[in-house]
Image 1 (cartoon, helix red, strand yellow):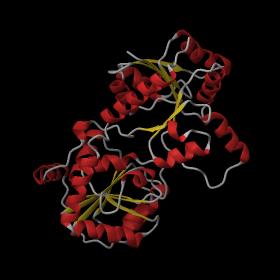
Image 2 (image 1 turned 60 degrees about the horizontal axis):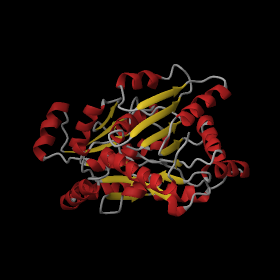
Image 3 (image 1 turned 90 degrees about the vertical axis):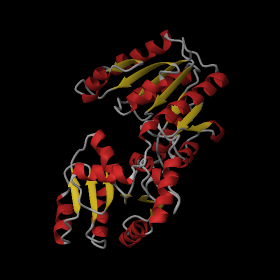
Image 4 (image 1 turned 120 degrees about the vertical axis):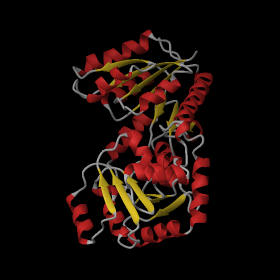
Length: 371
């Protein structure tokens, strides 16, 4: 069985299940860096009892921190080493260390775009780190271009689906299921527009709220993501939008219910480095309306196949596309079926298998070992 080491700059809770799945196919070890000993994710991962080995590198004197992960590399014989979070001190040092020791490694970068303006020194630092990898792992074409700009070789970049939903969760609710869940959640509306995400200016919920003023009152809009901004409450009150509902944090199990009863997912974000809610919505068969500034949208959405891409802050376009999808049931149904089909392999299991394929290719190509 292949021995795999992954070094990450932080503990990301939703990745634990991904690594549990990957650990079915390889002997996996994780090294996590944390900013301080009070990091809430430390207790979370301990309670989760993951199926893989892990080490937590606590803050301290820099040389001691780096010595800990170097010892793990030296004492293990790994078929593949993957680094993620190249901007962090620990991972950037690992890049330099592996390069000096001539140990091949994969650099994983989930989502980034080339900045329009950048200091020369910043650009040089990125190039000096990114270009050192032997292979690169990412999620979308925009990040491929980013990696190439900083020295990655196009022929050695591999992609994986960025999804944490299980195959069993790719499901379009039937009309009967929808009506049952609507009663359970006390939702009175004929149709529902859903948005999930933080209530921040960048997510542009103000655009969605204003767009709702142009729709019939029997269309409900549920915006989930914590306490709403004061200005959002003011817009709702000014426009007398009783059909716009703000919900705070919703547990994943209950969040799935809101995806199930929704008819459209609207995400008019002003910018999103990725946007995992796009694939989550598609996995429930929802037509998606998002903007050209959402990387996940640009990667996954084709107009009238999966939903629509619109310009940012374009209320008219959002209203138009909402009306189209709410009134043209045959189009909405076709898009729903397309999205379920598109997401069949865009799952946590698909993500783990893509990682495994890349790890096996890396091992064959570089015969990576460290001792």
